Image (cartoon, rainbow, N blue to C red; front, top):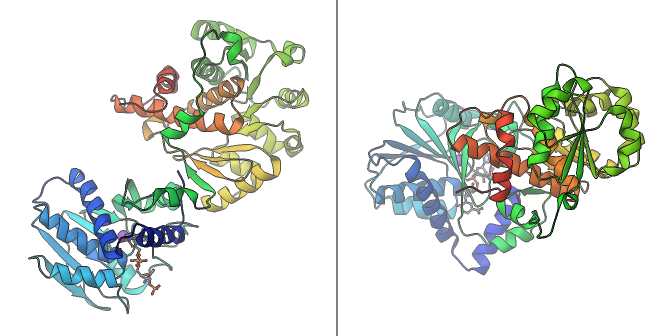
Length: 495
Ligand SMILES: NC(=O)C1=CN([C@@H]2O[C@H](COP(=O)(O)OP(=O)(O)OC[C@H]3O[C@@H](n4cnc5c(N)ncnc54)[C@H](OP(=O)(O)O)[C@@H]3O)[C@@H](O)[C@H]2O)[C@@H](O)CC1
Ligand SMILES: [K+]
């Protein structure tokens, strides 16, 4: 699914108006209806007192239409504020302002410098500014948004929280309204996936307002959101008459005396993700644990690596590895194989940058933020970090899996796939080791690195989502790996 910029959304808006065709005020009505349909299940009590704060642009026009539609749905404790801090108003705002006068809804207008009354409503709908934001909030706008943020009611933003940019860098210095819910039109905005948006968004919902989807999907963009359709398209069914040799041999080089668990988790994840064979190159001290936890996994002593290297289809190296630089250097010197480089192996690359020149093709690096910055230098924002990731992925022809709440998978052509799955119950040690096992397993099964990365990240998240949906407040990594086969079986969707 294409993630588009605010300017492209405007273009898709214009295109839909011209070609459907539909009057822009009717498109606004459709958007307001879609908002209301999503709002009602979130706040089903029609006695809820609601304050709707509207600017005089199209976001404000949406707010006025929402007020009228909610009232028609039986919500009868609605107050509307119209904030006339701008010099102009949009036509569709004007039309909806006139329509609202035919309802019993109370409207109060505010002008620059006006004192702002106390807010005691349970829900505040933010229709002040949307994707038209073109500068930081200052003056009366800033005063108003701070006033709203200061009251306890739940805030629900229309399309985008006021003050949050839809795309581009989100400076720390820019103030925004904090929305408990954002109901966003047609597409989530790119900024929603950046950790900096946490200051403005608790959760977001996306509603279809009927913009021309085929047009949107043809718009040029470097950002795509992974959906279940991608998983269904990419995943190859296991074949009749197939056998373990059909699904590749994954080697995991991992573990150390105190971090053997990391090796066990990534080996287990490889088995459960479907590699025909999985071998573990771990210190001998881990052998008893390996045989107990994962009897499916074979052992490959470090001293045999050079000799049997040719038998593996993909190699994952790093989880719990410790500072074994010689081992990493040796592996990067053997014949090139699809490889996943994670955790301690990334730290070793950062310490010895000349090793970066020896990365095989294809290669997937899976840094979290700190590992990424160790490798490529510190970054003051995620937007900058992502820019570096794209430059590096292109220059080195590698896939970079930049792990976060929404993991960015940066492809060798510089495009970015955003993974929406996963949840806070999964925030615990070992999750990255599981991901490395899954990535290596899919590479061993013959998936190109781009596809392996999409499959592994998405399915890793849906496995955790399903466990959380089953009531697990905490999802340990060991529990997650046993869910992977079901996540694959359901192609990343659970009903
Ligand atoms: N596209 C779609 O598909 C659909 C979009 N719809 C809705 O339209 C919304 C976008 O509406 P919009 O373009 O009228 O802009 P909006 O956000 O209301 O801002 C109004 C004006 O405020 C100004 N301004 C900006 N920043 C400022 C600041 N910091 N401080 C002070 N002023 C500032 C700026 O005016 P300017 O400075 O350019 O004069 C801007 O134009 C979108 O979010 C969605 O809700 C739906 O109705 C249907 C389909
Ligand atoms: K808004």
